[in-house]
Length: 337
Image (tube, rainbow, N blue to C red; front, side, top):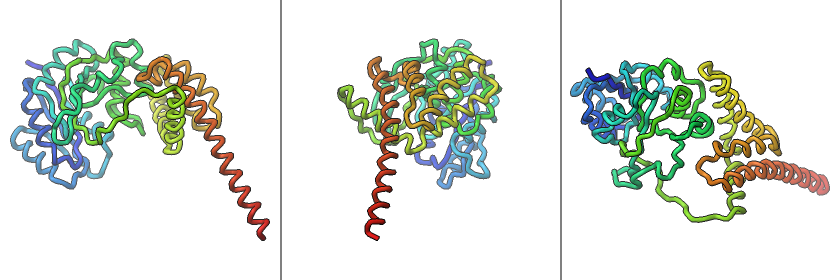
């Protein structure tokens, strides 16, 4: 008998595209599937659609008593899966009919496999026929764990993973940003992440499609990185990332070697957020630039590292300028009085 594949779907106010997604699941060439849906207190017609598909196909769903957020909602859905394999599913995409069958044929005993995807607009018009042609394919690298500590390159809706991973990924650590990132990170410690180079999902893109292209000189690149780092500091991005890394460091599933690398990257963000001139962060970032800035060429990796250095210096100058401005105002006010 064919292995059972569980499809874990997290919904929230997804009525507009949910039927497209569910129809594409139930039209799979691979038939031995169960669909597990956790709804996160939708207020649109989502639950009625789920009831309809439960009656028609035997879909299983539950409605949360209170909002969990999409990460915890996926955690709950995965926990309810009974299959030999688990496929993650968004509420608004369209799966190619052969998606599950193809991934099962190509996983070959590895913990997880993912595919390319086609990027489409809300109305299903194609924006791009491949996501990964724009990305350095680190799937073939021996350092997948190191890349993943720094940034995610696995899109959840394209993945299929073996159910034994549940024993290691659940419960999710607190404050992790993305469920697919955590699953891929853990899987990378147990074997290779396999990449199937053909698109098996039409991934609905809800943002705008404007992108700036063209070559930039090194000076402009440095100032771009300075601006990016300063904005992320202002928006507490690095504080958040520091918390993510601190939480996953506490996990007992990682080896000493894995924890050592997590701790190294954690120290970069500690230095960046707690010191005005992050010398240690800059040195470590320079050493690990291959993994921290994987989508950049060798020169731009160095440029981006310099951006971290100068961003810290500019942050110090900003604080100094603000301090001097306040002092000047105080002196002028005293002179007026």
